[in-house]
Length: 206
Image 1: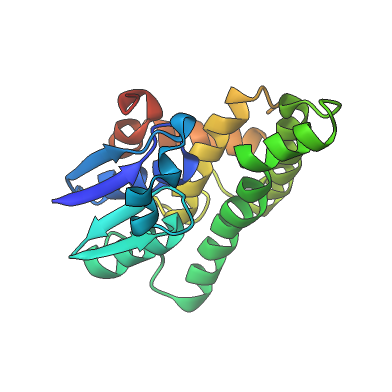
Image 2 (image 1 turned 180 degrees about the vertical axis):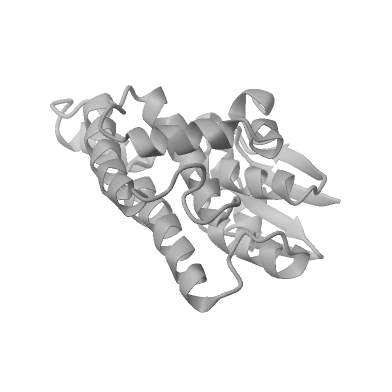
């Protein structure tokens, strides 16, 4: 059994849950409550020295970093999460990284919290989130302007696994999505897929 150490509202964990469900795999969720600091407990640090989620116990190995886990799943289980051609893979990675390496890190709650603290509250969390998520999604909108149902091609890829959680976070923080209609359309299509619905945070809330 695959064991996923995650937190229900973590967007990185959400990405991996989508991939697992898309591949038709069963997994056991082992919650790591970020609100109580469980990610800093010695037991979790032994799994992931970064003190982050998710961590996945897969094939007798502990893997960390959501995109690395998804790529491993694609290589060992198939499923088309990355295209077979080099250019297609580069394109999907570009879209994935635009979310996971550009938007997500600066909008991590620890980063936003530091900004609030250092500004003595002059920069509220909501303002920080809306600014950087909105800016990142505006660029992503241009990158997928020629797409309709998926961020790339005609099937779910790693980039879609990244988009859905980011759109969830955008709505959570009240980001104005009127400027990204293509992303809204793609997200709506993806959200109707059974695998994506199975991974939704509401289904994993402790």
